[in-house]
Length: 133
Image (tube, rainbow, N blue to C red; front, side, top):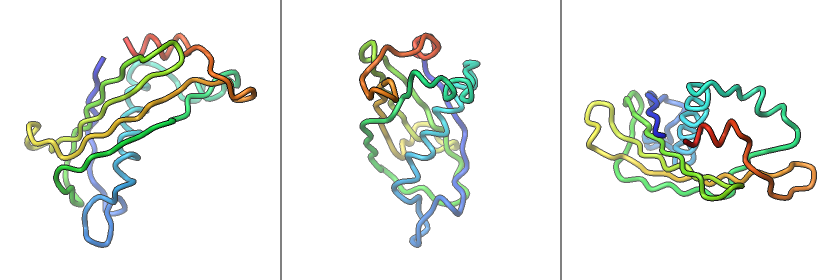
């Protein structure tokens, strides 16, 4: 399953040099993740209200290949992959909307499903497994 999210770079996304602040690329990727869940019919409110599971991010990376500026139109392409019955990873590619062949940045987030009380790994919820397919 892959998904593309359109995003504008806002002034608040940039630093004093006028380019996207490094941490904000992960914020943008997380917005794309949330949009993909919504598109798949998964309610974040319902998912988060299930007190038996949580899906924290346990690892992330970001590589910046070209600068992104205020006003730029981006396409954030995400490709999730199930790694095990308790873990999945999402690969993101951020491209300029005007030239989808120009990769501006890449990122990865790895998520683990845990029981928030015991802090032990638990099976991914069925709705997430379906979304991963």
